[in-house]
Length: 127
Length: 322
Image (cartoon, rainbow over all chains, first blue to last red; front, side):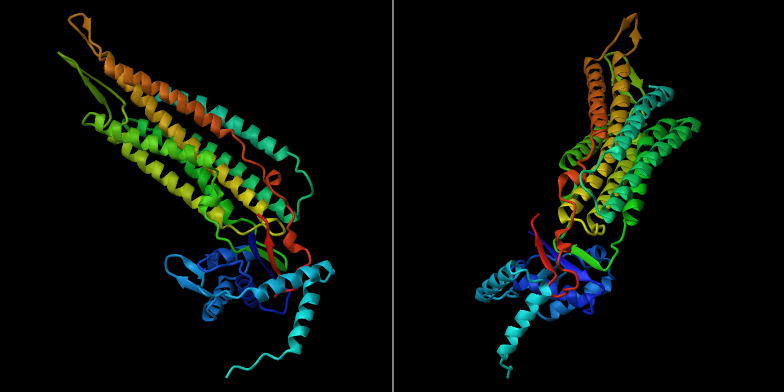
């Protein structure tokens, strides 16, 4: 599998946030595993045609969230323990996406369903 | 071997190589592409072909200028100037490729795609051309080191000693010629590595599948390494020819009291070097006309990641089979 990210410059979501979300999603889905190397800031910025600072900010925020770590020799890699150990929810998400696709829903419609389902159950506040 | 003879030899090699290169270029330009190509893919291919054509033209011009400079040079530097001509052509070739990669079309449009996998030079280099370039480099290094050690003190000739006399013949690629040639080869190799790095890290061609983009990178790397192996191969051929010729001449020896003295080892080595030069020349020229694999035949062109994901920033995540 070749992992891809898509950045929509016309979206209201800033490009750095789109990059952060998608890298985080790949890690959460287990497609990026611990110690997997991410492209260099310069290479990813060149591929996306965005400023290097945009990618740098995304990487910085991912690092602050514990998703990636930056090492001197290997560059930016996925942090150990970044992906959830329990994959029950992941499997349920994959099943849901397959179902949504079969029903002809686009991404936004599928996300609406998820958001609606999330609203049914309030996330317990952390003490 | 005299300077004029070497000039004629280089002309005999380079002119056919230039003609064959132009024919290959025309074939590439006229080759039909199966299926419709996205505008970005057409632009990228056009940029790559234009870069290659310009690089070939600059290489031929650089060689012609180098030969002219060599013809105007006098004294001991003639042989050195001729020996550096292939490297001069190679550096012109690499300079154009470097500019072509630096000016590679930037991503355009609102929707941008990128792979999260790291691309390295290893991912884009074609193994056959890499092996050829490595083989010529290693052989050139070994040959120049051996000839440097075997040469006479001047570093420009070789001396064969007989029972009652000795025979010296030159030019011979000792340190006088060898060190500048090694330096030139090192610059060509470093330049090649730099351009290959540019190819590996250049922007992705928008609206194309990752496999197509990678195939185009491999095609570019093939073209660069094809030029480099040609340059290094021709340098090696020149060194082997000059060394072989000098050893053959020295091995024949001189006539003492009506008896011509010969050195079998020197003569045999000289003949072997000449034969090796011929084999290297034929292999180099054969590889110089091997076309790269067209990107359109190597992978799907259209980008599946562009369907149904526009505008969905958070969900625009795609895993595409490679």
